[in-house]
Length: 618
Image (cartoon, rainbow, N blue to C red; front, side, top):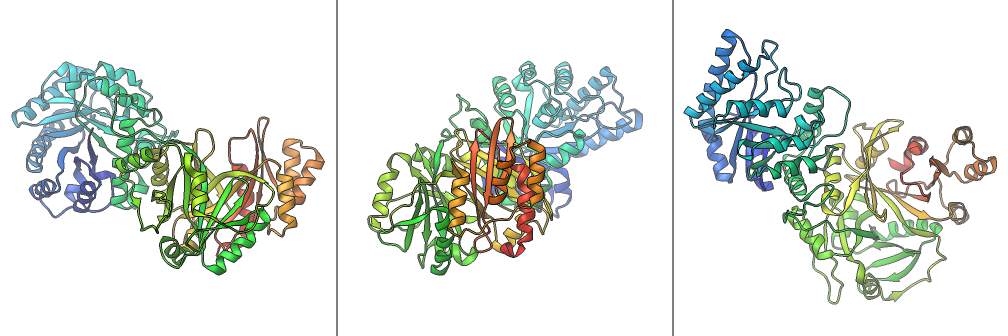
């Protein structure tokens, strides 16, 4: 795949955009006209810069309102086109994007449109240039790639071809099978984006909500496969309009862009059998461990909170100041080493999750995919006889370890040979999900990180009402549900998510949900052992009784323990929350009875309860 990106897709000056695009590894870039108009460098200087960076200028865009204009307006349009040919010659590109006309003056008479496009193509051909004609979803007379292709086909000029843009076709629900009618040699460039499914006007949807492949809901796999079948071998170029990306880091957005194209090349929702672009996604087999970075004082306080949940310090590391806490199959590692990443993490963030270990069947394959996607590996010196566990950089500078599922028992025995306390009776069945909070602008980037790196799928985005503002939330899940991350971000400065980021100095794990099979017994044991719990108002339980018609004794049992409840058909979900540890991380106990969600309906109740304990998160 030859990769390109339109400069409008990222933030900054044209010069900084091109540097970020080259650093990410793109083959080329489309120059957006406004970016060129905004720089003090001339077109020839930009061309020289792109050559030095190893970037091809894949297209100059956009040229608007060419075809169908009457009299003097038509003459001015063709004069403008000739001037753009001059700019293109200086830029070193032979391709200009001509959008279907939106001018209220434009007429839709088909012979007129054909004549105008034929004249434009003839003028371009004389200059050694090419015109790529694109049907805008909101075009006045041409708003469907089938109509655009019919015009290009009937003009039949070597300098006139088609531009396919995934948004303009898929937002209108045009069947991708129709692409099969297009000749591959007449497809001059392919522009790519994804988008969430929204009910709004096409122009507003396009200008503010486009995103990278894999971040939205458009059926890109079918669309891309239909293009491949035409024999197209040109550039696949991202064209993204998104307010978040314009506010984000140019280098970060550019890297996400390249990663998203590689993901699409190998298949977003299903593998592309003919592609060798990426090693296949490796499936995670569960959360093997969570690692907390902590000072000794913080470790003592964290241990005091883990004990009521049934955890015990069962072993000590062979050579480091690291303790393994266990409860059933759940492993929590507390790292108090005075040097290394964990210590640095604690200095910056305080006691918090600095690493997550995922059990994987194919660790080499996962690492190879990470390398192909330019996911940074983390490497540090390991001591003599230490078990090597490869890792990559994750959310907020934390680590994501890949643990070989086949040898994990040997790993624990080797690394933690020094027994401490005996394990407590089993109360938990695993880690149900891990909630990570991040800046709103980073939300889509980390969603792409997970769905492109490992075999996980995203759920629909939802908005949760915090008493101080809206929070956007989305889960990414493995197929068997053994690994679940919920991602959260908010633009509201005083929401719990934003306060966490301010207090924590960055993105990270805000809460951990443990699974159990009898939440009433597990909560009773935790309360008896002194757990500090989140208090839920009685009004919630009165409404719960009215809403679901639950037995009064069940309502009273939940109210006495501050357990929340949700139902989806016959599937049930029970939740219990602790107060926050160190004003950062809190814990949740959940019992699922065939329930697939996360109790989103209860999130405002939980957030309001936490707001009453605002010092927990200051």
